[in-house]
Every structure is written in C-alpha cells, then in structure tokens.
Image (tube, rainbow, N blue to C red; front, side, top):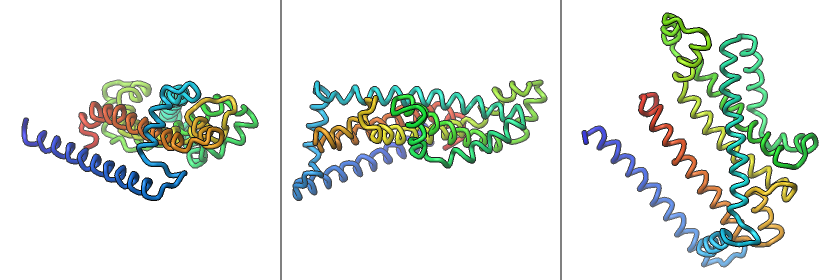
Length: 267
C-alpha cells in the first residue's frame, strides 16, 4: 500500500470513528435524560428498541410491511423521476425551444414544495398511493433536472468540439460527452431528489392517515393517534433514519467511489 492510499484509508477510518463516537454520545445522553425525567412522550432508548423489535413480528402492526410499501413507492418514483429528468434535460440540449421552456418549468416547480401540491392531488387524484407517487416524482424530477442542466453548462467547450471532430451527432454528443462529463451533477441531483422524495412521501402518508395507503407514515400516525404507542413512534422514526443512512452509504457512496471518484471528478 503506497502512502497516498494509506492516507486516504486513515482519513476514512478516522471519519468513521468520529461519527461512531458522536452517535454513542448522543445515545448515552438520550438514555440518561429519558431515565432521569421519566416523561411518557420521551421514552428511553431501551424501551424504543424493545418496541421496535416487537413490531417486526407483531401481527397487529408489522412495521416491515409498512416500510416495504413506502420503499416500493419511493423506488418507483425515483426511477420515473430520474429517467424523465435525464430525457427532458437531454432534449433541452437537442432543441433550444425545448430548453428554454424546460428551464422555465424548472424555475417554477423546483421552488414549489411537494407538500403544497397535496391539496390539489387530493382533489384531483384522491388520497391514495398514486398521489404519493406523483409527489415523489415531483420531488425528484426538478432538482435533478436543475443539477443536470447546470452540469451541461459547466462542460468545457473543448470536450464538445472534440466530440464534433469525431463526427458525433447531437445525440452522440449527448450520450458520449454531455452525460458522462456531468455525471457528478447527475448523481448529486439524484441524491437531493432522494432526500426530498423520502421526506415528502412520509409527510404525505402522515397527512393522508389511513386513507387508502399503508406506508411508514401511516404507521407513525396510527401509533400516535390510535394505538397510543409512543415508543413505536420513535422506533419508526429511527427506522426511517436507518434506511436513509443505508441508502446514502450503501448505494450512493458506492456509486460515487466506483465512478466519479475513480474518474477524478470529485475528491
């Protein structure tokens, strides 16, 4: 192992160590405060973990089924939103008129919170999974499109000229120059879209309550209002955080390390 690789490995493990110590300190502080105050709405960590483990096998409230339902919706919305963003951003390069209109749409809808669309979706589509799916697509499409368009604008003109000298058509330039050269922006936009969509999906499920949906947001709402099981509310929130961390480090970081980091596009 050379010195550069050793330095990177040391930095990585140091960062993980600091993060682990921070989490341990937070957990200890939580446990000490909860046990000393004995507040019903602020349970201790051991109680939360016990309720969370019990909810995995409970026939009344199988939390994994709720989480699976939400995760299927988020994956479908991410796939549709990401594909649409890449296609429409690519068409914006092909045609200037489409590009002008699409940039206007991005400016309008990227600033519009997904939750603000819920009343309209409930009126037009209904309080169901389709409304939540549309909300997820909205949360992914516009930030990802903005990042892709910004990435296209930052591509050095020499790259584009080199592609033209090789005889690439506009579609060849799009596939062979624009998208690879701006892949860091594509990935960044997807991460932002994922975060927005995950938050929006859970918020929508909690607002809809039990109305024709069965996601983790509905679980939290039921645990708070119907079952009066406050430790399960915290347990579901912790599970949401765990899923988010797994997706961040087990999916996005792996893609980054095997693509843009390996290509030298980011550090």
